[in-house]
Length: 224
Ligand code: TIU
Image (cartoon, rainbow, N blue to C red; front, side, top):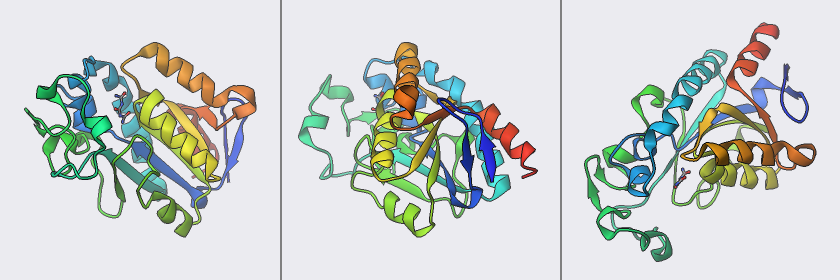
């Protein structure tokens, strides 16, 4: 068992029942020329969370924790992409349009894949999801339940969109979520800050907030 410092309170974690969930650390969101930039964002704002994610990923792998990666994206024929999601913004840079990293947010294209710094290794499930939430129309819940997971350590992008949506979904399904603040990023620093506050407010209304350093300290203290 591990005692992890967090807001609004510390929590006790059973590593055998804990998974690291890295959400949408994809080139499409973190590198120029992808979906994130097509929406008018400065993608360099997300880069600060890469190194904390890398350190936590290494620690999780060393502990033999279940590590799960997600990727937002759609089938090449766009049959799983709601028109209401596609038909926004400049048509030349919409989902499915060609870009420097291949077609934007399309499965199998270079831009839709995980950034090289955090690339999944053999045995780590990769969940392709059509929406912002990691549970919507995916087999994530089944994978977690089959492994008896009760707690998720969560990092990824963006804090207020796919991380928040996924944490809300997970919370409603009975999982405890600990959002690792430094392992998340947003194109809007203010949204990042407030999104984290929203998780931990009201006694932890849908989760806890901690960070990668506290997690590594807890692992050390537990002699793990
Ligand atoms: N645009 C934005 O902030 N996020 C997304 O579209 N997807 C994720 O957060 N992964």
